[in-house]
Image 1 (cartoon, rainbow, N blue to C red):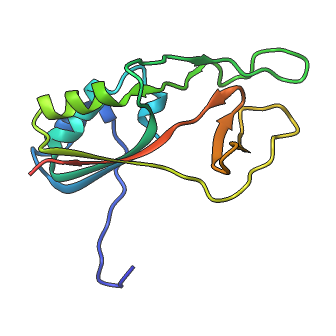
Image 2: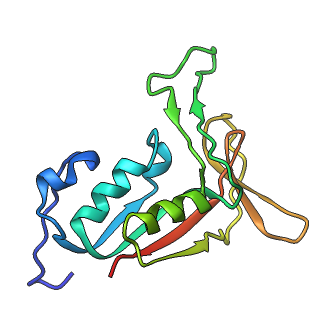
Length: 160
């Protein structure tokens, strides 16, 4: 970053952004690999829209199917006891429902791109919830973590 750039990290609650920041404080807001782990995206997206003027950029798990998949992941140690940070969410949201939600809450446009990984990742030897790839018959790498397919999307929500 240039020497004259000023920035500050602020720890806060994603569900209370409008309590921390004035309305439309930011031109751009980012949410990278976050909403998949929430119990739902609606309140978080509403908060982001409240503090953002122009664009929200999101990466998360979305499906082109008209289904939401709410998953609780329980990870286990080698001796089959539940790991300390389990359970946690690994949700895959309906892209159509998400898009409709954004438009109905004031978004002008929702632009979606599939995330296509371009490297091979090996299956983890420890059988943990780690990302790995499997090539499809047409050569596209599909991402998995543990037993779950990971349909990552990159989304731009235009607000103005």
